[in-house]
Image (cartoon, rainbow, N blue to C red):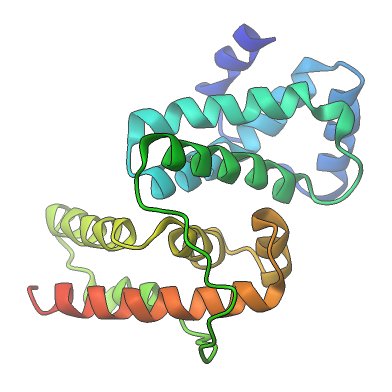
Length: 208
């Protein structure tokens, strides 16, 4: 199975949605490896984007992405309805949290008891608007690196919520499910993370 996954992993970029995804999950649960490979092709870029943002290490992100799909495949019999995307994201996010703890990167801190007014606008939207992104490819790359560096300055819980909601575009319900926290915590954590990003990106913007 692993070799078959690896062969398909780099050969195509496909997207499946709705009933097609449900059918593929059911087929994969019955042992259809090709069906699972289609799910891999649909989600591999998003899972890699998630893991690379959370870890800040592209090589490690590749490993965690592969491990995520292998874990998902091995645990398919335990998946019962619900959102396959949320389930997959939760596997990947938990794996990234494990890596942070293993290597003692930014600590996983709890802010459930902290209160902050909800901010509905992501500073990443403003920072990456067309008026702020130079036309030159090299300068665009520099701006992207500013965003990456800003994310890396957040503690991992805040970084995760920003990546899931603002970059991966999960709604609050999905993000709460992926992270295993109440929706209220999602909102407060996201507001605090956005405020911190606004400060970091504001300082970076002054340079350009």
